Length: 408
Image 1: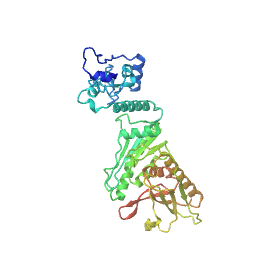
Image 2: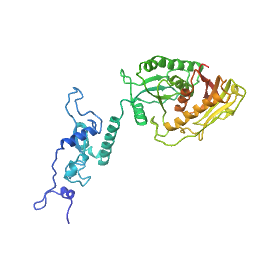
Image 3: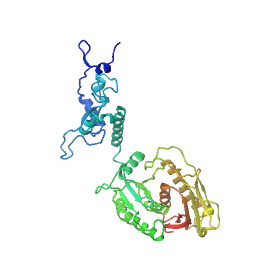
Image 4: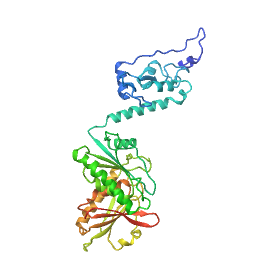
């Protein structure tokens, strides 16, 4: 019975029998080596360490090593050498090699730790690393975005989005390059978490929030818009709905803006690739009364019944913007946020045309997610459209006025 090279390699050499197979290491061609270095971006495929210069002296000396995923020799002493019945040429082929740093090379091959690094895991890590390098180097540096992060507590709860989360979101969702501040490599941040009174949503709390937001916009952002340093923004915000709407009014249309929100399924800030449209119904009852006030109900992430509204708005005409199906994750893609934006513009047009041009104050009750709330503020111009009186749902006590936005 004939034996495979692996079976022959397992047997001790006995006089008269074929010697164990011994393969020779073959050097890569210059073209093969260059291709591998370019594919890995000059970085370790396992820990991302830069392999083309020293970490202490920055001396341009290559520190990367070529590691065999399936060991060169088809025997049990060669790391993963028996995991695949490859021949000599296949074991020396670039597809079986990966660029790694010296310490990782030693660890994946060392007896006692090599079993922690099965061949399928190594191959996947190499493929993921090459895919990431290809994606990052494909980003157009001519399409930067300045990230803006607003963080607040909501009923004593807060959500964190770090710099890595921001970068991943803008790169994967919009193929944009995050332009952090050069001084400290941070995004522009508005941190409201230390302001007292959030849980009770007191007027003093909202006044302090407004002042903090105004400070950042009137100085840092206004200067960036004026001198051209900021040509596009990406917004990550977690706060009560009145705060988000106010943020949206401050953003306005100075520069193009992408708004992000945390996905309830993945728990990150990357917009999922979910296709489909989201129909919205815009209901503006006809009137000839020339009202000065009206109510706006937005049903997107949930449903608000007019019977829930506070007494101070009783008797006012109710306008509505409602998703065909309202649930917490209904706006789960940029295309559906665009559908919501179009519905708001339709609402504004009907207010102007259908007898509500005299409305100076619009009482807003919104069941809307983070991105929709910011978008609401961006669509309503605080100089030409009605003032938005944005209400906040209180625990067990119904709705209470939170902030007023606009000057009409």
